[in-house]
Image (spheres, one colour):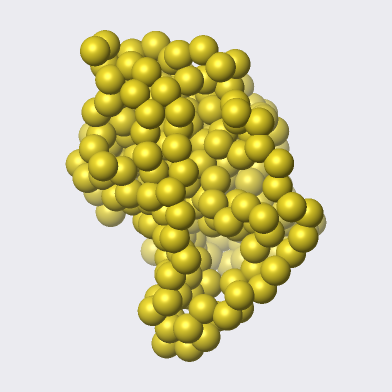
Length: 306
């Protein structure tokens, strides 16, 4: 439960109201399976609408969220906005708060008095990158496939929850793109026997039309393995086996279309403690090893008993 207080100036009169946000999506008859949720504060004359492009997404696919604050009264409302006027939160099926957009931003303390005419809207577009951020340890950790609930918020208003389903990638190749570079991670298959090593092919490709100076250290690629509760169980650069990397930074010019490639191995599907993992679903996320500037979307692999 989160208590949010807001100061709204309505028709020249200062109104202070506090709203206690409580959300239990799994037990709520109001949870929506459509791509639009609405919340209304009739007293303040405002309506908050949240719209998604769809309700099913591939694992790692960014989810674009449009939030609109609309004046549904017949008079101009002078709305006082603090910092970022809208927010959203993501919950899982056990009602745990996994992601708060507001908490992932660096914002400066500002106030603005914004007149909203009758029927006029203020529209904002936010993105959920399909990660956690509810604790420092979980910052940036990808979520697993499953059912999630998104709730839009503004001061004094929350929308009805929208249910979204995240499904695994059907292929054995995933990609991440940033700053003219494309990071590709490819596996030979997506099902492996317990104890079988998994070869993971990586490439970084210049997909721009000009030369890019690629900065790297002694480790160009890395990957994490997560279990179905989003806990990291293995990181290639940490091992086992133990690995040492040169302490230097180098720059390689990559011409347009040129790539750097390597093959890393998750040995014998072991955990960071050196013991075999249990059969089940796991998620591999590739990254560039120098500064983890960008990552691939997660790839699901299934470990089965031989």
